[in-house]
Image 1: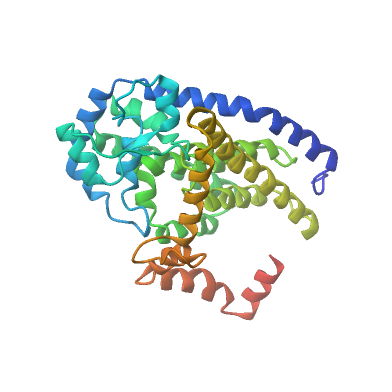
Image 2 (image 1 turned 135 degrees about the vertical axis):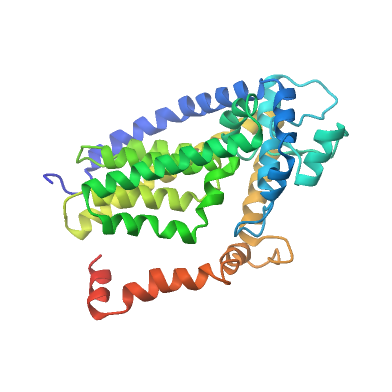
Length: 356
């Protein structure tokens, strides 16, 4: 590599471009959601009910201990609009009214009896921009199969590229952690699968990129897409995998330069992720009022503290700890042995970790 680190002029210039992109990206995201919301609901409702059993099978928490019914909540966004007063398309899209829980959702689908709605405007729900058009023509199980095929194909393409450019051992190193992640649920669930494709697609793009300069705007877009498809679906994993692949394709460089590159990528990814989330809440505040910000802050506190039999609702970080505790039966020990004990088991390996 001829270049080392990240020049301040480059950072400043790319930051200016990113700032200018905020309204453009937010506008595109909003238009995509409005287009999906405008689709007729009857075919979507029929195609969900056609595979009711499959939908209920997805209620297993898959390692999550707070939002086990996320799939039903997500599918109800754009579909459920029980307000008596007429709303225009923009209001329906921004409010993102939803039903909490599979039982309530399926009861409404079958009977049409209105249930108390929840405004779910704090997330973009970008998965609806893809899932609703698909559910207009395919039933829910077929959509899951489509996401599975796309996810496995994309992941295979990424592993093949890494194997071609490096070696088989690195392929194994990339693939093994996905066993601990319970990646099958990540791939097939409509509210998660698009985020998985963003992560793997970003990895393929970075592996194919033939430039030395840090992909600052690329990471900004990856962060924005993470916020769009689902703000809290493994965001740290998406950034970490992208940063790891970017690092693999760089020649060896001084640690300070490598760290500067990593921090600059994290800054731009975070600006895309948090900035587009804030843009969504700001748009919602324009439409529904300033309570949109209060709702967003309340949801953030809930995600950190929890409020269930597994997370007390008071202790900061209780919900995060409960998620880790959910892995204790099998995958927690497997992960600890494979990714902590094994890498530190010999003096040579410990030296490699220190060097890394």
